Image (tube, rainbow, N blue to C red):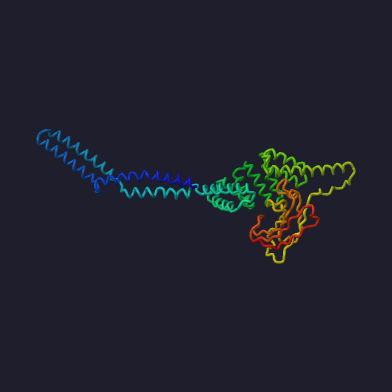
Length: 430
């Protein structure tokens, strides 16, 4: 931003110099003449009279004839008319120095006002916020801590104002949606991802990210809308890794482990093998392969006549049961949203399994299992110890806010959770 203002200042000074220099020269000319203005009309008339007197004197001395006198006099009069015309033009062109100085000052001021109204100064402010946020997030990643979200909120607020002023800027809509996902404001994200897709129906990256935002907003469930956007993205780019990841989750939740493995294997081909996302996918593939092998073994046994031909029971998936209820002093309303989730004890804040219900549903027994993972390899079996949380959201979002009512318990080991865990919501977050 500092560089922008320096360039702006230099350009303004350059533009103003075209007015300052003439004003300076005019002021110097008046100073040399003693400050008295020069009457050009009087000078022209004095010269005309002097030349006319010379012609009359030459006629008296018979140096010229009467015919020559008349001709020279006519030429002198024409010359007078030309000189008077030039004098009037000079009067029009000549201006007061103070006027030129005033215009020189007003030009950059007016230009700045016009730029603030019609220019991209707000976009430069957004660019600065992006740069600061990137540096902060990078530093937080190196130090192994969660980044402060204040810059993300400031960037969101700037972008909301900008898309109102310039609604046709698709880049700002996309950036706003991405920041909203980071802030877990998925409804806002879907709205602006949708704006981009409506303007460009080939934006496969945006389609996949919108499907992911809808998935997260639905409590990590594959809804029909998620399926539609995933299918649309894959119809344009069958190798898009985000869409393939969601397609794998859908197949996994439907217990089609072979299809889940196939989708995730394809997604791995387009990802950095050393990335955390790729490692999560590999862990998900191993889990799908194991569960798929168990299902095939059960089917083979049944086919050989060694098992009851009746429909098989659901696969034995690692599960945690949570009994959620409200304490007597909890000040909540029936329509408020309740998030019940498991996360790693003293680890990353991302839920490993999550369920969304309403206060009106309580008390309720919640089932959290392996199929509710937010990402492949990030499930309740991936953490050595778990923390169980039940939280009534004050704003409807999954991120904890001041004023939320909550209950939590941990550390807990999955293998030891043989009975449902009771969570009574009665603590208000400061």
